[in-house]
Image 1: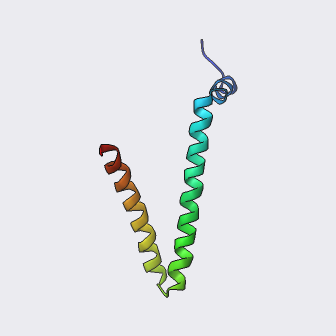
Image 2: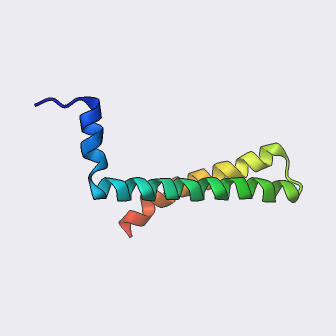
Length: 74
């Protein structure tokens, strides 16, 4: 039986596990955006150039990706 898009969304949205996963994702995204915004303002106030601020932001992203690969193995 093939479901329409609306029926599929309706089924998925009724699952408590999906709601919990979506809430956790959006919370993590909000925290990440908050930290990225805070770091930019903090580094600029310390006199870093735009390029240096970008490098700090890139370092945050790379270290986050590395951590997500390493931590599950511990």
